[in-house]
Amino acid sequence: MEGITGELWEGVLPDVLRQLYVGRATGRLLLQRGGERHGLRLSSGHILNAETSVREDRMGSLLVASGRLTEGDVKRATGFALRDGKRLGAVLVDLGLLDADGLEEAVSAHVQHVLRKAFAWSDGRYEFHPEVEGSARQGDVTLRLPTGELILQAARSVHDPDVVRYKLGSLDRKIALSNDPLLRFQHISLNPVDGYVLSRVDGRSSAREVASLIPLPEHEVHRSLFALLCVGVIDILPDDQKPAKPAGRKRPPTPSGLVLANVPADAAPSRGEKTRPMPALDQRRLEILGVHESLDRLSHFDLLHVGRGASAAEISAAYVSLARRFHPDGHHEPALSDLRGSLEQIFQRLGEAYEVLGDPESRARYEQELERAARPRPPRPAGAR
Image (cartoon, rainbow, N blue to C red; front, side, top):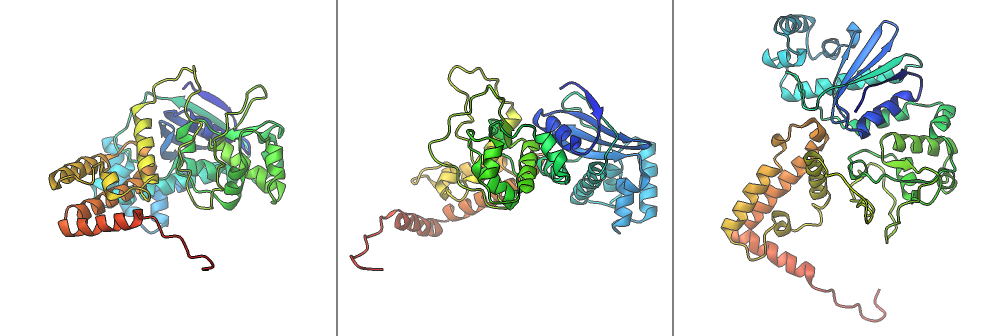
């Protein structure tokens, strides 16, 4: 992705973050207003960490303010960092002042703090300087905070309804769910308004028509549309673009607090359309999300990819292979950082499956349960309630 630059005012930063996120950009985003300067480092569209020229906004100052460290701790660690050319976080871990989890929490809190400051700016400039993919630096950590959530926060911080309407553009253009599976299949928290809006997006209705179907204040619907557009979950179709063919079944409303975790029926390319191979990391992400979304539907046999007649050795081999593939500690790529919770649930369920199927008595009981569940229920007698 090429470098970009422009003026900052309310509503611009969410758009910039969306462009970098959707474009899987790697590099540094600089935000400047007067003598105040903040920066974000990204890898494949995901935020790694933040930096700032404002002393009280630096990670060390935040750790002191929260009571996690003393000023003496930070001063000593900063001296080592300057001497050895390391990041402060790496030195804090070397000195035993933070463990790996504590460092991740500190970096996440720092990113959120810096973005909250920048979201409030009504003027300034932004510059994005691309870097080569994989140019990790010593002391970089995997940020667990989903970048999609950060973009939602940025979009929801725009309270001026006139700014939101301006950014939405014409309300008579049709809106549709994104055709990018990595955007439709991402883990983001939805509020009740978002879920209501998504339940009405069908690729054939305009933003104005969607808003008219929702019995909520217009400005709330517009703000939700703006946030969902910024995170890439929905797109506004150009006037000359035909909407994707709707799926055979209606999309159910998305409850509040759930994640977008259903593979889109229209994500596949249309006949004759040329596609680029999906990057291996993107394929891996979709695999993890797909397995996690199907955990409640899979039996222990299905989860381990073994038949009902599998031997103990086959079950053990399947478990070892899958446990290695989905172990949470084996995924350090920034683009997968927000999936750690999903990996932990998959890994836990794999352990449960192996524990049940690996013991002859518990396996027999489990198979009996599967057989009972598969039996058709007898019809109710006439007149029975």
